[in-house]
Image (cartoon, rainbow, N blue to C red; front, side, top):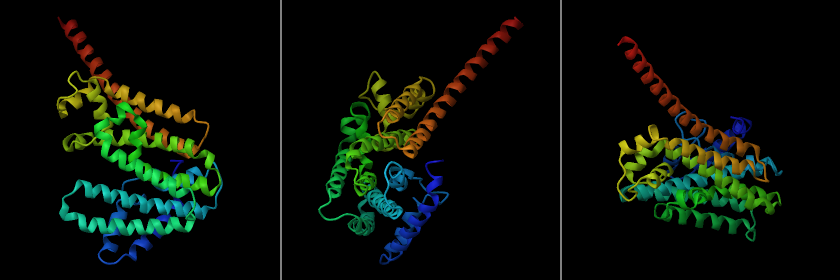
Amino acid sequence: MNYFEPYASELRIVFAEAKQRIATFPEPFNQAGLAYLHKFNVFERDSSKNYICYLLPYWINEAVSIPIWHCRALSLANVFNMLYYFLQDDVMDESPAAWKEQLALAHLCHSELETILRDLFAADSSFWSYRQLYVNEWATAVVHEDKHDYFKTDMVMVAKKASPLKLASTGVLLLADRPELISQVERLVDYSLVLLQMADDLIDWEDDLQERNYNCLLSMIHAKRPSAHLSLYKHEVESYIYDRGLMNDYSKRSKDILDIQNNSPVHIESLLSFSHSIYGGISSFTDQIEQTKRSLLSGGFDYILSNNQKN
C-alpha cells in the first residue's frame, strides 16, 4: 500500500500522542477513550482502517510543502475529529441510557481537537469558515441522505457525511498559502469518500437492509426494480448481486469516479492510489461473481453435452 507505508512511522507518532492525550482524561473517560481509540488504531489487527482520515494531510502535502510537524498536528486533529463524530453516530444509533457517557467522551475529544487547531490557525484565519462549511455539510447529509437518495440524485453528497475530515486537507493548503487549490482538492477528496462509501456499503448491505440505513448498493437496486416503493428483501438483493448483473453497473460507477479523479488538474499520487485500491476491491468482487457464473454455465453446458453423448 504505497499510500500508507511511506507514512507508517509518522502515524505511530500520531497515535502515540493521541493515547497520551486521552490518558489525561478524567476517570472513567480515559479508559473508555483509549478503548474507543483502539477500534480505529491502524496498527491494531482488529481495528477499522480509516486511512484517509489519518493520512490525508500527508497526502495533500505531496502537492505543496509544509513542515512535517504541521502534517502531524493535522493528522492528530483528524483522529480526535473522527472520534468525536463516530461517538455522535453511536449516540444516534443507541438507546438514551448510553448517551451520557458517550456525549461526555465526545466533548472531551472535541476539546482536544479545538486545542490542536487553535495552535495552528489564528482566530481570523479563513480556516474556521471552511470548518463550519464542513460541519454544515455533515449535518445536511446525515439528516437528508435517505430522503433525497443522494447516490441516485447527487452522488457527491454521499461523501458529505465525512466532510469534517476535509479540515485536514484544507488546513494543509492554507498553511502552504495555496488557497486556490482548495476547491479542486475538496472535489478529489469527495470522490474518494464516495468510493469508500460504495465499498463499505457493498460489505454492509445486509446490516443496512435490516436496520433501514441508507446504502448506495441498495439505492441502485431500488432504482432498477419495477416496484421501487415496495420493501426490499435479502433474497432479492442477493439475486441482483449474484444473478442479475448489478455488480457490473456498480463497478462501472466506481470506475467512472476513478476516471474523474485521474483527469483532475491537481494530481495527488497517494490519494489516487487510495482510490484505485478501493476501486480494485469492488472490481475484483465483480470479476469473481462473473467468473463463478461463467463456470456454472460452462459446467451446465458440459453436463448437457455428456448426457447427449450417452443417449
